Each structure stands twice: as C-alpha cells, then as structure tokens.
Length: 305
Length: 298
Image 1: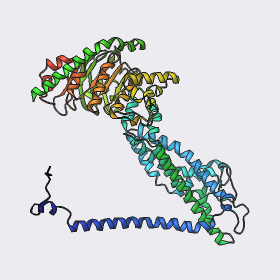
Image 2: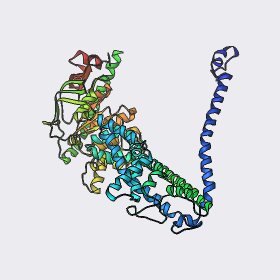
Image 3: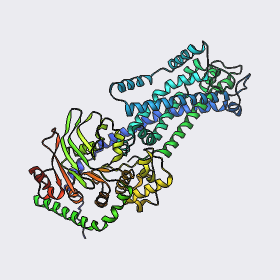
Image 4: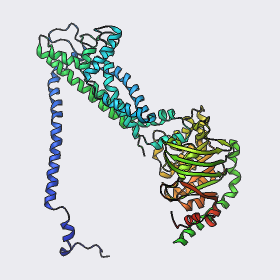
C-alpha cells in the first residue's frame, strides 16, 4: 500500500524549515557548549593538579616505616607517622560517636516533632553553627575542659569535642533533608496500622532514610578529618603513640603535617617529605570513606515509589 | 448523554445483583472466619461531625450510621470532603497540623474521640487502605504483611506469624501469586498486587472496620475488578467504608451510599443524602442526588 505520508515538496517546505534551527542558532548552541565544557575543565584543573602535586611530593615520604613507627626518639630522617594516623582515626571516631546520635536525634526532632517558633529558632541556630570557625570550636573545647581539669590540659577527647561542634550542624542539616524526603504516605500507612509515632520513626522512617543518613555522616566526617587549628589547641603535639583519648596528648595527621613543615628536623627534606606524605594519607582516608559511603548507599538505598 | 450515564448506573446495579446472587452459595464458608476469630464487625455512628483545617470549615455536620458487615460508599464530586470525613473516622484527620474535629464519632457506642482514648488504639480497630498503594519499601512482602503486628509490639512466635501472613494474603487473594517470593521487597509488585498487599497488611491486624480511600483509582480495570471482588468478600468479616469517585463502582460494590456535595467552592461539604445503593441510584429523595447520579454535574 502506498504510504500516505508525503515528503515535503519544495514549495511546501518554507514554514517548517524556516522556523527550525538556522545556522546562527546552531552556532550559538555550539559556542555555549564549548564555553560550558571549558568552564568544567577549568574547575577540574585545580583539583587534578592538587592531587597530582600531593601524590608527587608525598610518595617519596611514604615507606613502611611511615605507617608502622611513631616519631618517639627519632632523629635525622628516621621515625614514622603511625601515631599520627592512629590519632586521626581515634579522634575522628570519637567525634563521630558524639556527633551522630546528637545530630540525628536533633534532625528527628526538627523534622518529625518540631512546630512553629521553636523549630524555626533551632534551624536558624543550626545554620549559624555551620559557620563556626574551627579555631573557635577548638578554643571552646579547651576552655570547657580547662574548667574541670586545669590549665594546659591536652587530651585526645578534647579534640573530638571540638570536632563534634563542627560536625553536629552538618549532620543535622543533611539528616533533616534526608528525613524530609521520606514520603508522608509511608508514615500514614504505619499510623493507619495503629503504630505509635516513635515506632513509626525508628522502624519505618529511619530505615528508609538509612542510606542517605550514612552519606550525610560521611560528608561530615570528610569535613572535619583535616581540621588543624582546633586540634593544635586541644590535642597538642606529641611524638609517641597514644591510643587513649582520655589520657594525654594525641598526635594526628593534620597537626603532624603542620609540625613537620614548621619545625623540620636536621634533615629538612625528610621532614618535608613526611609532611607531604601525611597530607597524601589524609586525602587517601577521605577517598576511602567516600568510596565506602557510595557502596553503602548503593547497597542500602530504597527505591521509594 | 444523560441517558448514557443512567444506563451505566443501571448496568452497574445489574452487575451488583448478579454478584450478590453468585456469592450466596459461598456465604456459608465465608462466615466461617468471622466465627473462628470470634469478633463481630462493629457499627460506626457519627453525630454532627464538623471538620476544620484551622479556620477553614471543610465538612459540615455529618450525621450517619454505617451498618456492620456492609459496604458503605461515600460519593460526591471532587473537594466535597469525602476523604476528609473518612479520615476522621479513624482519627487520621487530626494528624494534619491545625486540623480539628467537632461532634461525635462512636464505634459500637464508644466515643473514639474521648480524651482518655489513645488514637493508636482506635487505628488498630479501624484500619485504612490508601489511594496510592504504599507498601513499606525497606521490608519484604512477608514483613509488610506482618508489619501491623511487629510494629505493634505483639510478641508472637514465628509459626503464628507465618499463619497470620498466609491467612491475610489468602484473604486478599494474593497468596498464590506471591507465596514463592515472600522475602522479596514489597515494592517489586504490580500496582494491583501492591494494593492487595496493602489490604492484606490492613486485615492482618484484624480490625473491625476497614476504610478505603479510592482504593482502585490508581489501578487498571483488571486490578480494579479484582479489588472490588475482594471487597465484596471482605464485608462478611469487616465493616467497609469506601470513598470513590467512580459512581459505577459505588453502584457495583456497595450496599449503602452516602452522597456528599458542596454548595460552592470555599463552602463546607455536607451530606446530602444516604440510603441503600439501589434507592440512591434509581430513586433518590433529593434533586441534587439525582442530578449527580445521572451525570448532570460532577
């Protein structure tokens, strides 16, 4: 059967073809695309150059010694940063343990229970807290512990308290956003079954939001893992391994890098190398956390229809 | 055009008669579960119920009786307060911030809005199925059906839970389709299956009354028919109230019909007339009702 669709005869074509993309619009299209791509490349350049530089300068400082030995009694180019690595991990872990319950419970309050003025006031203050300079958080933690434990006190847990002041607002804001995304009809389904509100939250809302909550926590951790200023005034500088956050100074990677750079030993280059290696390790830690967060998200995310 | 609407209703009424004749031989077996569970479906009565959202008067002075073991349909055009009224029957209306209820709603004589009554207890006796199927996405099919029990902290053994899940899924006509994949997530089913899953979840807690808010409006015609058949069977064990936009569905599936209407936008919705379905559709008392069911408006 002959097709009933006719191709455009030349004299019929003018309307359709004239109102389409002429050469001028096409070239504007192309120019914009090139500009946008160029902007993207421009934004990526500092990132890649940063990673490249740190890798280039940090790799010479890496060694088995770097990861397994601390700096106690080390002179010349000897010694490693195992105490700093351990310190970062411990201080960050304790800060997470403090911040996550407080942050998530506050987000639950703000999203599920809060009403009116109290909620608006709390949201405002949380937003203000996200802007606290990190040195202020450090000084606050120091002042707090000084009241109870005397001047000059330096403890790993003080660093964790300072960091959690920085972490909590981030956890609250991202948890609040994630809880908001959980659709109301799921809560209604639970209420209609005769479920009390708190149980709806713990058994339905939180599991549904789980993947997003983990991502939010990971973001908060990445924010604080490299903080130097608050840790300088709270955890101090020390050369030996200390795994007890409640007893004595604790070294960490950020302060270690700062210290190696500022007061290098006799062999300057070795100290500088170690500083760069510490920076590289910090970046590696953040990357590992990020990858772990993505894996958790993919594994546990719930498709909400 | 008017003739067509009236004819559709007449056909629907015929369908209903046919279905009721069909189901008579099975009435004997379908009352068995009610006897076994030992519970009688209860009557809901409302007296002068007015519903507000803040200052906005949404529904005005509804007084009606919902008969036990019958399907009552609430019909009316959009925005006339049917869903708002339905939600006030199991104390879901008050979950909206600013929402208020005036008047009395009783379940077999007990006032459900009494200050000493916990709304959670009311909702365990009066269950609800929503327009959009909403199975819990983090749970498997099995866990979804059992959710009513596990979320209410009822300590029951695994064997008992298995029994409840199977009974509810059979009751919702979903057992054969999902019995091999009970541990798969609840979201992986078709729309009609999800809605039947939500019905199974609602009946697993053995309520006395089932409220259904446009349960078929998100479903295709085949699934709609399946759910309507299911409703017809469930009424032997529960009192059912369904809100529907679809007049023919009301004519097909319900025993009594209540017609709600709005005088004008911004005015509260009110109950115009309520009566046995056959009467409302063939010989209503109010002109408004007749206009609506014959398709002159709405």
